[in-house]
Length: 271
Image (cartoon, rainbow, N blue to C red; front, side, top):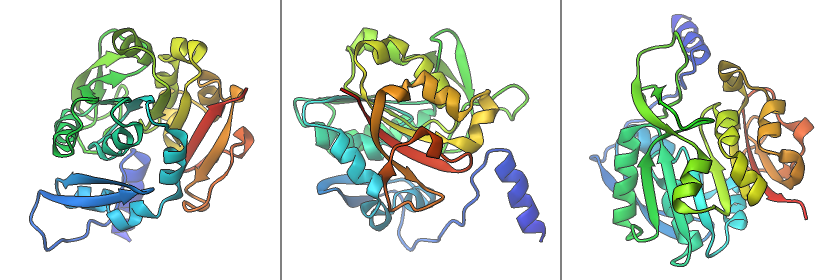
C-alpha cells in the first residue's frame, strides 16, 4: 500500500518507476542488436540500460520498422534526445556512408556513452553527438534532471545539471539542413519544434516525434500547440499509441492522439 502510494507520487513528479531486473552479467558489456534488418553493436552500461534496450523487445517494436521506412540512404538526420546512442547507431546504418546523423542530448553522461557507441560501430566519420539542450531559444542554459532518462526542469523542481541551449535552426546554420528530424524530449516537444521554425518552413523535413502527453502541461504545452509548432497539418503518416498497442500502427490523425501516455508519430510532408 505504501509502495504504491510512493510510486504514484513519483510518477506525478515526472519520474518513471519500473522494476529493475537483476542480471548475471558484468557491466558494461556489448550486445548485438538487429532492428528492421539492420545490425549494430551496443554498449550496455548497466542494469537500467539493459532494461531499456533489451534486443528481443526492441526487435519486435513496429515503431522501429516505421523509422526504417521513414529514413532513406543518404539522408541527413538530426536526433534531439539521443539518450545513450541506440538510435544513433541504427540511424547511421540506415543513412549509410553518404548520409549524416547528428545527435543531441541534455545529459553529459548520455553523450559520452553515445560517443562510445559510435566508436564501437565505426560510425564517427558520418555521425556526431553534442551535449546541448535544444529548445525555442539558443540563449543561456537549461537545467536538466540527473537521472538517465533526463528531462528539462522547470522553476521549483529539484536541483539538476546545466546544459547550454541550442535550437534546431542554429544547428542547421552550422551543419546544414536536415532531411529527418527525430525528437524524444519527455514533454519538451513544442519548445524544440519552435526552435525548428526555419527548417520546417524551408525543408519540411520528415518527422519522427515521441509525444509525451502526460508531461506537456509541465511546459505549458498541449497536443494542439505541439501540432501547431510542428506544422502537423502539412503532414501525413503513421502513429503508434503505446497505451493502446505498441505493436500496431495506425494512420496519423491529430484528433486521435492520446491525452495520456505516449504516442510516436512518423510523418512525411503532403505533396
